[in-house]
Length: 369
View 1: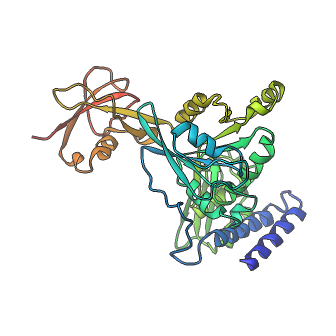
View 2: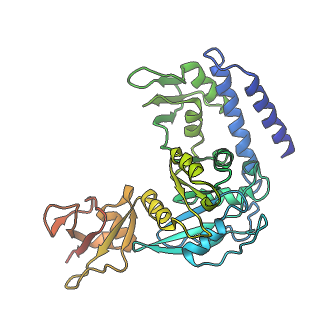
């Protein structure tokens, strides 16, 4: 590990000394690819059964998972206690929480699993402290809530984003629109976006990055103006893109003027866990970022069950997805579905398994005779 750290430090030093211009873009892209490969070696366990921290393999329960991430003593455990009623030890000293504490919130009919992760430290992405276990668990979350101290919100935010980014977590971003396909022969075929405008990537830079991965034959097509880091992310293929909320805690310790300055921060929610200020606002924001759809079941001849909805992600909420969530075998005997709600013009309306559902639709499955 020490040898890898030395190589990383050497590449970072060379990158800091290299001027950024068109003449050096190819060299910088090659250095970034080398750096990314070294970081991957650093964070991946040496064996198949690498070390795992106690309590970090938390069984996923409920409809979705939200992780609380932040530096020690910013109020993550207090937030978990207030929102879920789950006990997580709270004290005035750092590193009170040494393992992952799960809790469950029942909100708008959905069961949301909330994880209180141990405080991370600077250098977590390089394996310091329990950073590897903390950030690995954060990768499994549907939404990440970064809890910041109201006295140091911007500096802490920048440091935590840097640690998560180094572990392949991209916050509040969409996957790059790049088509990348390896092939057996034909060399490197590079095609810029339809407008022909490429601010960051040219053919030489693309080839130098691919050369670091020992890729000699591939098709690379840009569908937007992408950077060299975007291309590296696509080649690596292990990046996760997660919505993130910045919960600025302990706002009772700052002035109204200081609080108003934070309004310019995107994806931000001011709270005070100790005083229980704006916790409802945080929950509502978490629900919006989860982007889930609630579907109610209606057995034949009975009223809809409004107490226990089937919760699906909006990106996968067809009738077929609904059936598979209930039971994998239902789709085999599926004939049609009756739907009441915003996704149909008539109430009820017969639809097929490809029909897209909307929030709070009511569905009755009709099976084959």
